[in-house]
Length: 301
Image (cartoon, rainbow, N blue to C red; front, side, top):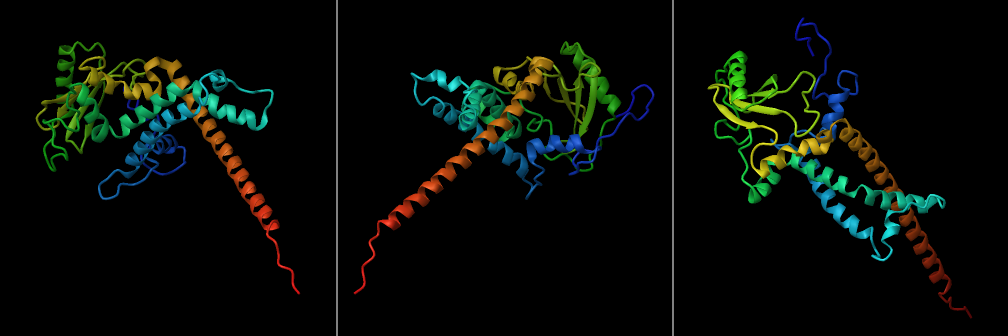
């Protein structure tokens, strides 16, 4: 991280390293969140697929959990209540069941958006395209080669930036260019439009991005918040929803709280499972002991 005015080094982060050192900690946690740092196998991003499948299971499990949380329609209020005075196992059970019911909608959104981000191209975009026309993504745009062009010449960043400024004005983008990067796998440039300090798009659907062929400078797609088909806008909303940024700092705090709640749901679920497993084992042992006592032993002569 460099001061744009003086060129002075302000800080460093090293992405990709499996390390808890201060230099690597935040990038390590971020990548752990969506890949578990599982390496590529045979060219397949196993970690991303694995967490995407976990998201799919979580999504459908949320539906099953909601049904199980309301065993009796007449007693629906019990599924929202917490038996604070009783404590013990009753409270543990209520924290798991009622806690899950209260935040069920948010859990479904997080599960669905996690699938959308990890498995966007292979699963989510094909499904969404059935209901709404989607603009080509940067990974499938006809202007770009899927695996880049080895040894191909690359335009200077200044040339791409000048083109992006003109295109930004044509698209009526109000923010200035705030970031420029080169994607070697696609041989493409990406230019983001945002004010200083807003590189993650802290409110709404995020920042506008324009993409270019790195050799020709020709446009290779765009992502402009709120523009495009209903399907395009749906896809734009996935990260802002998942991170809570769609609602600003309040949304981010809410999603952080939900993350803690998910940990509580997981812990209480494990406690309930262990208790029931232990009870079944004790019951089986008592049944076996009772059966043994009832066996008559032949008397000897």
